[in-house]
Length: 271
Ligand SMILES: [Zn+2]
Image 1 (cartoon, protein in one colour):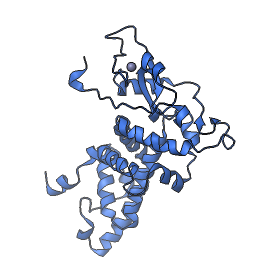
Image 2 (cartoon, rainbow, N blue to C red):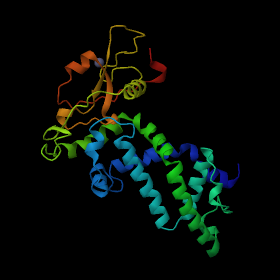
Image 3 (spheres, rainbow, N blue to C red):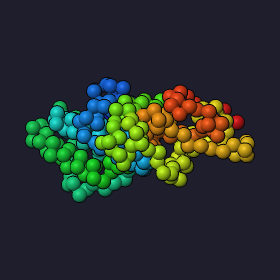
């Protein structure tokens, strides 16, 4: 592999790299915690997390961070970083972007270009970024989401920060979504796609006591889909706030309990 290849062929890790970046932001790396994000975007987050939808509130957060980061890179005039990243990603996902015309300097750095070439790079980077946004970004955002959705500690923190906003909401301002001050209404039903996703992520085990719910080991156990942060305590119905539990743990968990286990399912220890 040549020098350029080693430097730039990291597309396969884009989702993991970006997931790490989103975790950093959630914990306050650049002042883009949930509170700040909602403040900057003016997003109607309550309507999104009032009922489960496939494009979750976490998708919205990732989307914002992702594009803020690359727009910043463009604004600061580092076009080659944008070009090298997005051409890599478009190639990786086998998307044809020849419609954007020819650009001869892929793989180079900003410093290696003369002023005319640099101007060409700036123009191409902008076109590429717009094309990527339109054609590929939902796929990449979903890949980043997939990495983060398996990180229960992250999800707990994400929903804990949302909780800080929810507990201050007044029912008179949003009667369609709230049951009372600071409490979101229970969603009417949990869709099948969400149950399947949570069951697979949690590998068929109660996330509080670890009991097997696949019915392979025990036919009597039935599964429950439990709000990690209870609605009564500022939780919400976004898919990121659900976990798999057994009947017993579900019933014995208090209405307002914030008790949280990050149960890991070790691959070599499933039995
Ligand atoms: Zn249990």
